[in-house]
Image 1 (cartoon, rainbow, N blue to C red):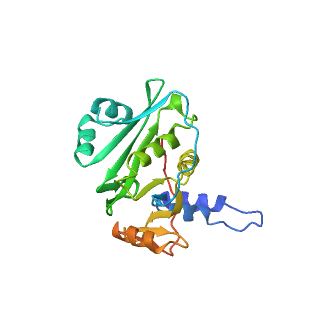
Image 2: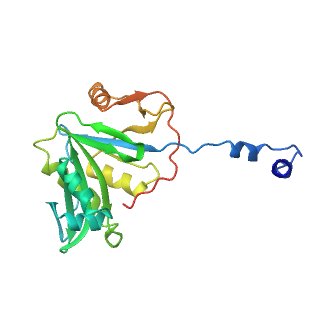
Image 3: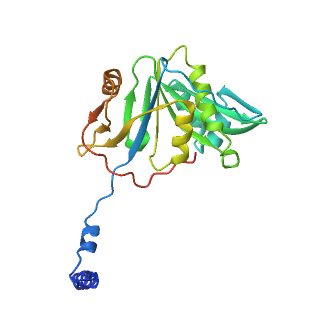
Length: 231
């Protein structure tokens, strides 16, 4: 029977001392862990670091809905919806070939990984859905694209926010190289809200995050599971 099988498996888990190990029942009781994302910010009062742009790189704002849909693997209707909701798209071309893209939200946004809607404070921007096509990765396009967007919007925006999965080291390197500063780890709390695990958080940033319904918390966020990103 299923019960006997369970007991037999439990009996087979024996350690070197001959004592029954309860590892399997413990694993059976585990629940999927919520996603956890690393949060970064850049303020207009800070200075962008100097980086080397790849030769042949050109970046521009784009409203080419068909190209954006193809590069992002989304429908044309989805691209139109984003543009209609005051999101701007940018495409990086390397030697005149589309190589990478990214989006900037102004006003409203959604952290899809945490299912958390954002109403951005005045002059705050959220950078999201970036991707470098596989053939062009490892050339420094991602941080160059980030810096271009921040300079493009610099006179209108006072602060930028961006996230990545902690497991995604290439994204983290590009974000830091572009000049972003680490804030803390976002995660879903037991009641479904979004918490921030951070230390020494400046009051200004704490208030801005509270306006976006993100509260600093002393709770430790769970490890990210099933996180992936095509950076």
